[in-house]
Amino acid sequence: MLKLLQKHKATLLYGTALALLLLAMRWAEYRFVIISNTQDLYTGFIALLFMGLGIWVTLKLAKPKKETIIIERELHSAAPQTLSDNHDLSKRELEVLQLMAAGHSNAEIAERLFVSLNTVKTHSSKIYEKLDVKRRTQAVEKAKQLAIIN
Image 1 (tube, rainbow, N blue to C red):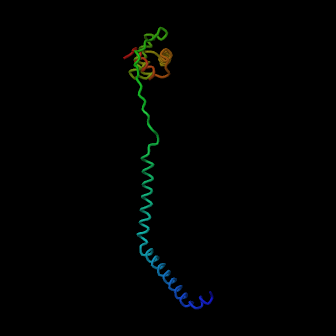
Image 2 (cartoon, rainbow, N blue to C red; image 1 turned 180 degrees about the vertical axis):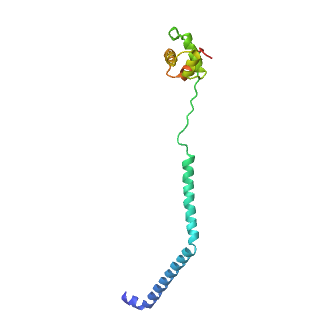
Image 3 (cartoon, helix red, strand yellow; image 1 turned 120 degrees about the vertical axis):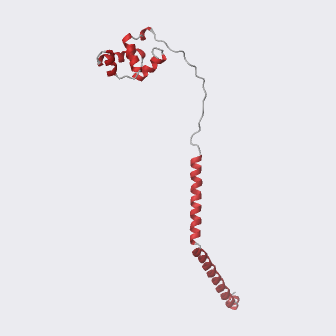
């Protein structure tokens, strides 16, 4: 085998040199393509990056987060309630309630009815107690539902 290598030594060296030269030329060609088209390559890479980002954002925004379920039920309107005997309002409490419904403050109600502010507050608390509510707006709403006031 050594004889064969020595006999073809020049051919092997020549072939190896040509292969190395071809490899160097390919490497130079590759570098030339990369260097001369660097801006195009970067632009293409950035375009691919933003395209991927756009697709990801679209999928996130277009996908509903929760499914909406609509349930239909029939509502039966109850007949207007009426006051029972223990909910009866006095004449003065009715006057205070009507003035509340008209949007007057406690001070304005006291001035119109010629009573003190404390008296109006007492009437108001009695109205809340009899109508089983906690606030002025609830009292007015419930009185309208019960047809006590218009």
